[in-house]
Image 1 (cartoon, rainbow, N blue to C red):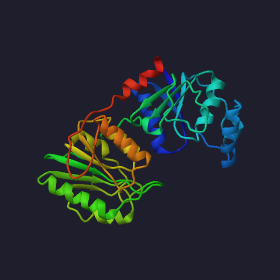
Image 2: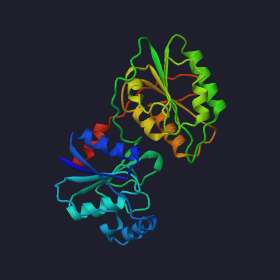
Image 3: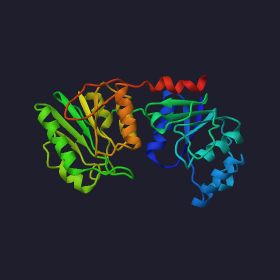
Image 4: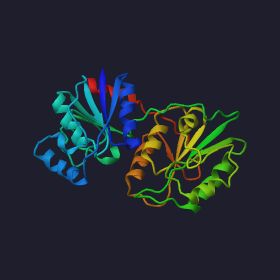
Length: 297
């Protein structure tokens, strides 16, 4: 099987499509796509409504001559191109998230539960985003260990420094004698970086200084991994790989966001625990490969 992956240049979107292809053990090519301007993206919603498909909305996107079995993409910047190319090549179209704003007539849609997708025969509902972490040998503890993954502010959530400090204090108190490892992310603020640098971590990555990603290594080795609630992709990685128990760190009291809805759903299914000062030892893992094989049904 050969898959064409469309990319909007957002790593979190691309990684879902790549994970899908790799679970199928398929060959894949990645094609960047972008609308020529924002106005044309808005126009694509109208054209899709009327079932009109054209490549002229995109920068340098021409019909392809390589043979593919299906097209896969994630992100609103890719969905119209996905449909357009699938029709031009007469192959199946797959999306890795609910394509909100567009008609749901793709051949297969993977939709996350927290997006409240409609129940249709071509929609497969997932508890999290597709992911396939790969350890890189960045962290190898010499004693029992726990890992902490810190994200940052986004459009819906703001990290509370004092709350995070209290959470870190509780973790250090609870896991005395353990190697405690930490990594920040591209979205972590300078204020939060300064906070975590004040703690005696056995292993620490400040992403703005050292842009590496040891999350998969944490999941490979750590007894418990703590992850801030602001990233669906980081949480998805944690419940899809390794044997670590997963604790999610709430950032504030706001509970009407997709992040809290996702975490709460996963907690109810036994994949993780919303950290409240106690550790619940939840380490159920999702079988993404089983979901990927839905394309053959």
